[in-house]
Figure (cartoon, rainbow, N blue to C red):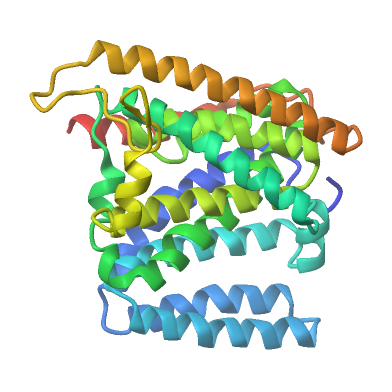
Length: 346
């Protein structure tokens, strides 16, 4: 962890939350100004260029990034710009944590190549994780509203930009932060797994997403702990997001109907509902879904066992392995919870 700038986990967490909260409001305001996109894009890449002002290649890449993202901002739907900009700011923050050195980003986050066998594991784990997450999501939707479906309702006519903005870039930013930084900062044990999953959950700031984000974040952290390769979780996370985008954008296509129609004993594995048409709870669906959920968990454990044999033991002592929450940590956590409650009930 020598390649990281911050020595305080609490400081990092509250800075990230403030970027997420204040940044969202600032971006909404700035993007509504006549030259807001140009100003915002220039600020983002000037920061990147400043961190690399001693490297010609870094300055050139910052200029190239400025050109590409300006094109994207001016051609994609306005609703996508804020999401892309916020994730770009997070990526710039990650670059800052590594002193502006892309090589350090890759090395410290253990981004390594994967082979065909690894891709097989990734595909199988993605399918199992989806089954697990879909059941948790179905349970949470009994109590909470699904905001993801609302916010991504226009993707069908802008799928290419949707893939970039809502699948690829968020997966990269979130994995580098939550598995790359947070998990490694706390070490490689159960404490790191639980805390990284909890903060990944809190970062979504709505109860529906928080429920399955915690489970998925927990699974991602275990995979990273076992393999020591962030490419695994990057790929699984991207496939997760791509699946969600496809089902929302092309929910009426033959392929989406085929996927959503896959069922075991009437329980739909990838598109379950635990409520009937009248909104009443179907107890048999809950029980059969829970049984399938447990089977999927057992299969994941089996896959992790094989992965443990495939990879040597990964032992990392985090810079703050003995960390305990401070005032800044609790303040940032309370901010996340207050926003979540206000969104859900107010």
